[in-house]
Amino acid sequence: MLKNFIMVKRMTRPAEVEPTAEAGQLLTAVGAKIRSLRKERGLTLERLSELSGLSTGIISQIERGKANPAFTSLVQLAHGLDIPVGRLFHVEERTSPVVRKGERRRLDHHGIETNGRYELLTPDLNGALEVTWVETPPGHDTSATPYRHNGEEFGLVLSGVTDVYLDGVRYRLEPGDSIRYASTIPHWYTNPGPETCTAVWVITPPSW
Image (cartoon, rainbow, N blue to C red; front, top):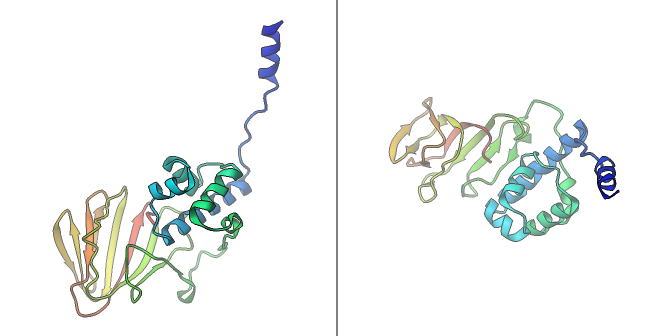
């Protein structure tokens, strides 16, 4: 009798339901929103984990739209980000593949000073590429916090001068010069020139 009861319980257990396409798009958008808010606040995954009580692995999956979080998890993340939970769902939708010059999304990235600019040239960060317009002021230097992550990067200098360091080896780029390298190599940048350096950078997969 007990065996039959257990079998019935197993048979009547509800099956997991895959998110619909519309729900999947919302999860991706909410994840991108969480990632954007975290970066705006200068929080690492580890720090947001401490503030929210969620593991770094779960947060990473949510940010990439790979998890279907419970509402309580979103409340915890909102608490860690110090925002109302409703703000996570206020996602700006882009329906056009075109990004107009005056509509670029400005990002706060890697300590670039207020007189520098870091703007997204793609409609969002949901694709395979992150393409950015970067303006760095004279004296800009990221050597204190070298970057290292999965993927590949490409840069093209439009004006000014920038020094790209790959594992300590310096490569000076002037207008028209470009560079490509594996992002797994420790790298950092400086602007040794007397004027702002303007460049276009392409990263895959998106790292922002």
